[in-house]
Amino acid sequence: MGKKKWIIVGAAVLVAVAVTVTLLLMDGGKPYSKYDLTEYITVGEYTGLEVDGFEISVSKAEINTRIQENLTAAGTTKTVEEGVVADGETIIIDFAGKVDGKVFDGGSANDQSLTIGSGSFIDGFESGLIGVEVGKTVDLDLTFPEDYSSTELAGKDVVFTVTVKSRQILVVPTLDDAFVKDNSEVDTVAEYKSLIKEQLTAEKTDAAVLAQKQKLWGAIVSASEVIKYPDKEVQAVIDSTVTEYKGYAEQYEMEYVEFLQQYVGVEDEADFNAQVADYAKVLVKEEMILYYIADKEDLRTSGEEYDQFITDTLADYGYTEDSFKETQGKTYEDAVGKDTIQRQLYLNKVQEFILSNAIVNPVK
Image (cartoon, rainbow, N blue to C red; front, side, top):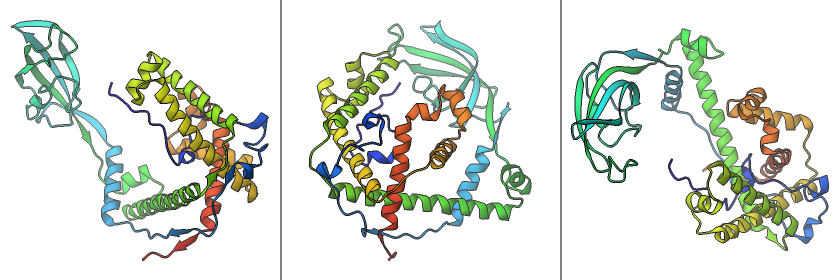
């Protein structure tokens, strides 16, 4: 397993939907409802800000690329017993490894599936099979790495006798009216290309609008000044984050400090706690700005919007509410928390308000 750095987010943390930090609700009320936020933060100007406009264009090359991606995704795998092995292909092999002329334990298998380039075998094994014809047997003269997991084999020369039995190739469908009818809501290739153009245009537009919102939000956060932090909220974020990472350590069956060192990249628990404290202040600052604007502009969310948000978010990741619960063992609401969902809804409302009240500069 490769090392993965768990990064403490330093900015724009409210943009993420499934933030793992638990929001603090003041005794069951709306977040920060019992605070006079003017005593805690001075919020920068959030109306009349300037942002660059954008123009969207979609090229024929982009349309063709997306269509090819769709065709490939609809492809089927076929086993063939001819041709030569290519990089990236999945093949079926028999192999036997010998060290000092003797077969060693675990060094042989029949009907083994192998994807060339996956790194499943020692260096030289997979690359040595590229160009080998199906049905042929080759000997690969290799050497185990010095740091190989088995000390008995580490650094030893080995000969793998490998027979390539078959290749698994992807059969990609042809773009024609039949494919279009089976894989879209339109009937002809021409209509399909128009549909793809509409989809790409919508995707680019959404991305451009999101970039505008994030730029404006970042400007507001930078222009806002914290007078003092509400200690209870900051501590709640710290406690929740530490609990979250201790849970990760348990999942990896590691000591907490060992997990932090390996996956977070900190020296010790004190170093991590310092980062978490900084993160908590960033998060709480953004929360205060968010709810200050929402209250001042009387921005509200509805139960219908709440339900639709869950449906849309799950759909973006290929889930329905039922399939998510089936695979994850809990509802999306239970997984990320009602407060996190509600906060994202408020963030959407606030950012839409900010953009609608911004000065959009014409494209030069």
